[in-house]
Length: 490
Figure: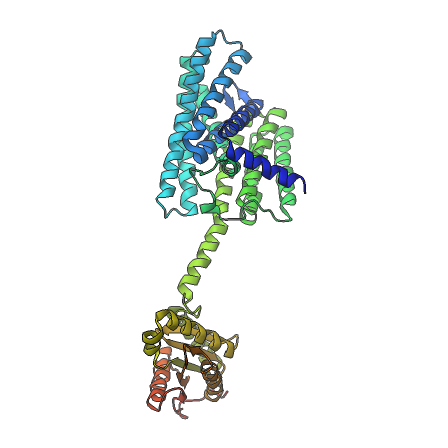
C-alpha cells in the first residue's frame, strides 16, 4: 500500500521536471556503461554493451530531448576512461575525445530511431514489420556506430589503429546485443517518465503490457537454470561444441514471448543476456565469447518475433470477425453464412438428416427509413436480429443476407419444426416497436431435397417468402414439399 503510491509519485515528479529526467538518464547511462565494462573481455569490447541499448531507447522515446544528457554522459565517461586506463591525455584532449565519442555514438542511433519513428507515424506498419525494421536498422546503425566510435577513439589517441582489425567485430556484436536485447525494456521504462513520447509503444503491443501470469517466476527460474547449466557444461567440458548448447535458450524464450506480456518478455531477455555475459567472465569462457555474443542476438531476435504471435492472433481474430460477422447486426455475414450452409448441407446429405432454411425480411422497411430515419432503421435491424437469435437453437445459424433480409439455417430440422420456429420469431418481431408503429415481417421456408445444393434450397425459400408477401405479408409461407424427392425423415 505504501510502495505503489511512492512509485507513482516519483514517476509524476520525473514527468514534470526536465532537469530530473536528464539527471536520471545521465545516472542510468553511466551505471549501465559500468555494467557493460564488468563483462569487457578485450579493451573497448564487451560481450554485451547495455549503454548502446539505453542510448537507442532514449533517442527512440525522447528524441532530441535525450541528446544533451547522452552527450554529457559520453564526455564524463571519457574522462573516467582516460583516468582508468592511465592515458597520457590532457583535460582538453579528453574533452575533445569525449565530444568525438559522443557524436560518433549518438548520431547513428539518432538517425536509426528517427527512421523507425517516421515509418511508424506513416501508419500501416504491422508488429512483424516493426520488428523486422527494428532488427535490420539496429544491425546497420550499430555497425555504423562501431566504426565511427573506433575512428573517434583512434583520432583521440585512446585506441591504436592496429586494434581496429581485431576489435570491430566483437565491438559491433556487443553493441548490437545491447540494442536488440535491452532497448525494448529501456524504452518501456523511459516512456513512463517522458511526456509526449516520439514513439508510442502501446500502439503496437497494446494495453496490459506490465502484467504477468502467476507462472512467470517459474518461467524465469527455468531460464536462469538453463543458462547456468549450459555455461557450466562449456566450463567443465571445454569442448567447442558445448558452447552451442546456449542456443537451446531460444525455446523457453519463445514460450515466454507467446505467454507473457511484452514487458516481461523483454525483462527475461535482459536477465538471460546479463547472465550469459557474467558467466563468460566468471567461468573464463573467453574462447567461446563470439558464440555467446551471437547466441544473445539470435535468441533475442527470436523472442522479439514471439511478441508478434499474440498480436497476430488478436489481429486475425479481428479480421475474422470483420469477414465472418455483419458489423451492424452481429449476425453471420453473407459470405460466411453461405460457406457454413454448404458444409451443413453436405453433412445432411451424408447423414441423411433433414435440414430447413428460413428466409425473412421486414415488411415495408423503406417506410421505416423514410419516416423515422436510417438510424431508426438500423436499430430495427439490430432488434430483429436479436429476437431471431433468441428463438433459434445453438446449432442454428443466422445470417444477414443483404439489406433487411435475414436467413436462418436449421440443421436436423424438418419443414414442420422449422415452421414452428419461424412462427416464434414472427411473434417476437411483432412486439418490436419503431416510433409509434410495430414491425411486421414475412417468412419463407423450404426443406432440403435429395442431392439439392444451397442455391436451389435458397431459391425455393425465397419463392416462399414472396408468396407470403403476395398473401398479405406478416406471415409464414412454406414451399410445398415434393414427397418423391424428400427422403429424410425428421
